[in-house]
Image (tube, helix red, strand yellow):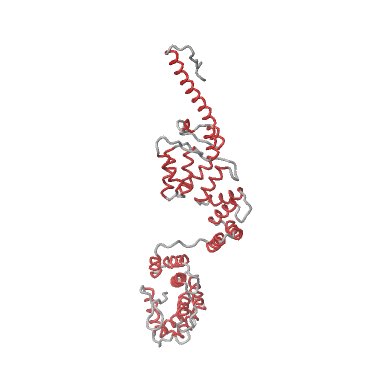
Length: 408
């Protein structure tokens, strides 16, 4: 059955897409109206009599009578009558205008998967009629209406364009948490996000993980941060995967494990997260859980840079320059390299293809590089003194200083 949806004279409305279902309703009522009688008891007959009064099918137009008979059928759970009665309340035809009452009847029809009930409930959400305006809810009901054959709903969906998908469960509560957080009520926000996180809300799990990591509104706890990052990461959240990898790289709240860090960075990067791509680039830059590879590092930095990641752009450009050292993973490495005067020698011993499992392994590599640097510098110094000694002897001087055997 089809509710009427475009204003015709002073009664109901028909949409511009009035179709065969609507025509069938009228045709059936025209054939049956003389047999129905003045006081029908069955919901289909009551609905038909309502249509008769609304559109002067063997009766005078009378909106109040139309509303009375639609109500009788609607009270017996007739979905088309419920949808039509809702529209009368929305427009104030034969009844006092009451948008909330209109929505109540639309919802009753929609609960029976009635196409017009679903369509008009979607329209109510789209336009804020009797409910708060919610495009996502409108999309949900239009989609359901279209699935059961509503041409009007199909047109309405097309007119909605490419707006956001239906809001996930808990979105309003999450938005409230965001509002509190932005107002710097970190404690209040943490309570909201924790409730949602415990119900499996991915973005809330990510957010409360941040707050535990930073100690915002909760007692700082790397272990709690890891717990929530992991829950969201295991649901496929790319930002949480990147954060979880960072916790494994730095050994915060978990045992330091660079291959595990690289695993989460890769999942995040494959999911298109710019931070994940940047961190995977760093992993290849320094051999963090993956074989050190300058070109792979550049490739991932470029992908993150394409998304506006400034650090990624900087490192990509640095590594693309010839004769550049890969750099330092952190301040501790920088201090070691500068303190041991390794910068020059490290240019020549970039750990191509080498995989480090922990920071201790990489620092051990740098210390070993310092030994190599000392040997190389000692040999270069011996070579210089040897040349001086030979030059001195060739000049016939007697005070030449013998450099001795080469250093081992």
